[in-house]
Image 1 (spheres, rainbow, N blue to C red):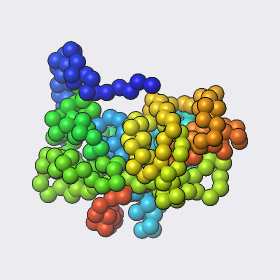
Image 2 (image 1 turned 30 degrees about the vertical axis):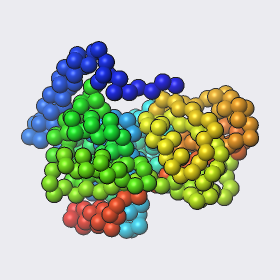
Image 3 (image 1 turned 90 degrees about the vertical axis):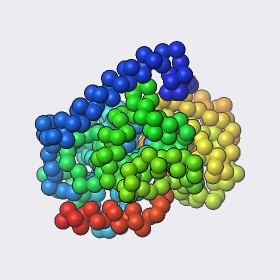
Length: 355
């Protein structure tokens, strides 16, 4: 399937027109931010600590693994984190607590369902109403606002900004301030970075690219806490159950890969870097609703080779027949943050300060 590329717009004949539209969008978001900054538009605090994890750009930025990392730090520290998420593509407006065993991606959204396998998750299109629901129902001790960087109505105690540093195009969009629809940015870089308490540069590689790191670092305000996030394949688990394959066991594994995520090439490169041998590759649009006949077609085309997918895709495939489930393996990826002790301390310090 064809994927949309901002680079095609930037090099196309309509680039001057799109750039003009981009400037208008940038002015509109700057005006909106100014209204919130001056409290002309109201903001509301929660009685619980709120940690926002978000980004400046559309598409995959490595935010979800970062949300998981933050939740894990909090759980290890004795807290009960609750992820507050919009539930994109789900029909449930909320506020609603996700049931990880009974709910479907169609109802609550694939990201919400995926995160609910490990953490308490509440979907709410109105995040402020969602926060009140969490407080009222005593669902946890701290709220993790997923993809909440541009959601200004809810006051947060810590703003974590995840920046996509996985490609040169993503970095160029940032430092050259390419705002939608000319580039990936949802708002101007200067507006967004001014609200960030912590910046996490998401590389997805096993190590940070020195040139991209230097480019972004030079554009950041001096003194802002900056961390690096890289990806690691933690395990590969069969949807039919059984013992998982650990990261080292995956090397040399022949497979067919498929995904319906914002950055399919990122998933593909992660698999290849970890030594998996791809015999087939199928990329679908983000949040894609897979049909059984599609999966069956792939399985018939590659009868003796396992199919691997992302966790976000895996939660949408649980309805498949037992014979298909036995062929599908879910790749579990974790974010490794460096320096981790300092990042962990920054998260915990927020709670001590709030308390």
